[in-house]
Image (cartoon, rainbow, N blue to C red; front, side, top):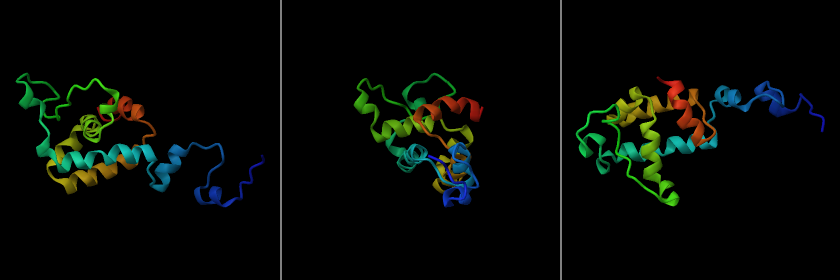
Length: 136
């Protein structure tokens, strides 16, 4: 199939058929579906913080994860896909400056919006593996 560069999708984005869509998502301000899903798991966690335990309440050892939510130990794969389990895990991988804003939902939402538009993720693995490279 021969591509016509004058077709409307290419005119709108000023791109070629083999260009990476990652930069196009950033340019257009659109989140990939997986990125939308990842970040949609955070707001229920922040809105219902009273339902979750913090690591410092579970044990008295001072660690860098003391202020994170406690993630229950689950052995079944199906239980690991539950909304609150994924939300806690995603929250724990957020940059500290965004986690610190979780006491104010509006500020948290604004910081999260800025963050997710600069870092579109296409898979869970990409989010969890790249977190150490993005914001340390």
